[in-house]
Length: 135
Length: 380
Image (cartoon, rainbow over all chains, first blue to last red; front, side):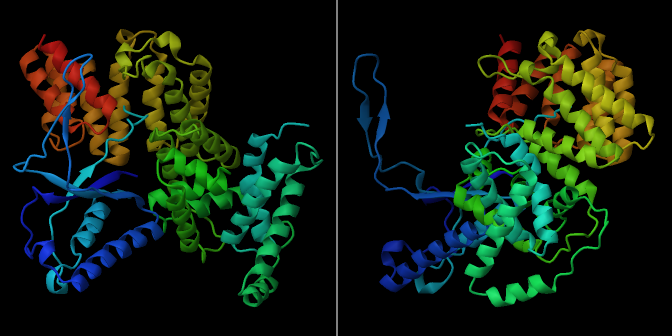
């Protein structure tokens, strides 16, 4: 029963076929988009495949250690950062094929003009526990 | 106050569900009612232990079922159905517990659903425990279980089931090592043991032996810091000799009946490993023969891959590599096997490159870390 992460990007994914920036949508188009996402989440909760979903703020900070006894250094945000994650959904499904199917459905959320965006989502398998029987 | 015997409660679960179904409840409602009865038993028994545990559970579960029917808005329809349900003929020899196994592993269920339903209705675990074991929210697991019940709602309870699907479900529970507060490997063994008591099937025995022989190695399989320890490097003094002896006995009795199947063949391989006092004493030629049987029985690419390792040990690393060339390089662990055989053949550069490739493709963190350490070791 593999788990997968569906990653949605603000930036860094290939451009979708129906590429109109969200800030150019009408309020109704935006509401329809949000409703589609909610319905999708409700559907996979009902099918027993939903694990988690979160949206992330686009604002972020880079942090690193600056050595013992010193406060961490912060920097950014970097405008030139190539990749920016918008949010994720975690699913627990029977197969890779099923994960593809669900990612395809999520990617069809409507955008400008109520047409499916067909945006690119990144599908990443979770590491699992090692098998008990190996030989 | 007498502590509640939870093992007994869980052992009785499928049989009690069976009785409630035979009295006319549908499976889904019976299963819910029995879960409620289990909760009540845990509450009541410490102060008031019953004379007859099963009888008590049947009575309480039946009452819970009737309460639910009365509370149900569609009660009329359901009561009519209950009334119309034929009572089983006296002396009908069907094992209720066995029927619950069949239903929970019904071929119409997906593997994840069958596993969840089996752990609840056969294993007597709560939805919360199953959710924790598989690291999903409790609400998700509850949905998965209720969907599974709807899927099998029209399956007749007395219909003969498919033992093969039951065994695959139990194998999955054993093999996927997730752990919450429930030890799934131990639970799989308990359920397979309970099944073996009820059937004379050689493959049930084979699967039980396979589980026992692998479970015996568990204390040696992981180092104190969580690192994987390979079979060759395990401290064999930490293997559980009692489990090995039991597994071997069960396997020998099954093999003697001469109806070989894939689980018996896998168990035979595990038994040969268990039999070697040191890794060097392993009877690899015989292990190759069992892999030949396994390939014949299953035509599984994974069996062929493992056979290549065994050939590498029984004949020579070169022979193992030759066996490997016939296989699809996209197979999981293909690179890891290649790395191992190349190292044995003395080609350390190729081995290091393949270990690195295998680490990148590893499906679990302990495997990835183990493979990464091999790269570091060879490139030191």
